[in-house]
Length: 128
Image 1 (cartoon, rainbow, N blue to C red):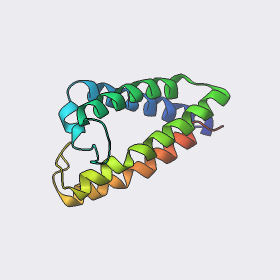
Image 2 (image 1 turned 45 degrees about the horizontal axis):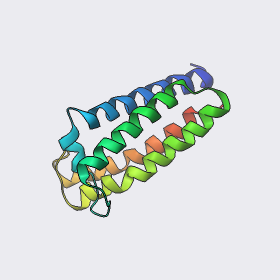
Image 3 (image 1 turned 120 degrees about the vertical axis):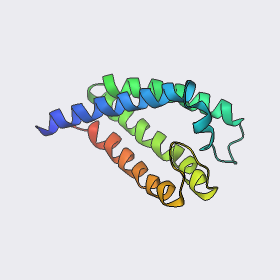
């Protein structure tokens, strides 16, 4: 697979994953996502989950369809989004909150290492 094709496939899958996660925020996994809202967020946890879900649906759609220079900007936004929500993952680990099958400290810790991978994929997949 060529680099260009690989980037396109990765960008499409990443966009679809973001849309799926956003829909999950708004529907069937809403309670689970509340476990990731850090205490320092000034909004109600449910409001935070809904807002982040809407942002993920919009961002995922943009990641999947953006082309050219616009794709680069959207990729940077997606990378920034993944960085911005990382404190929620840390909060879930620190406070030992069970959600999404992350029911041990080892599982919660391992999940922390996936966020940098998402940042890298968002960046790489939107560059030419």
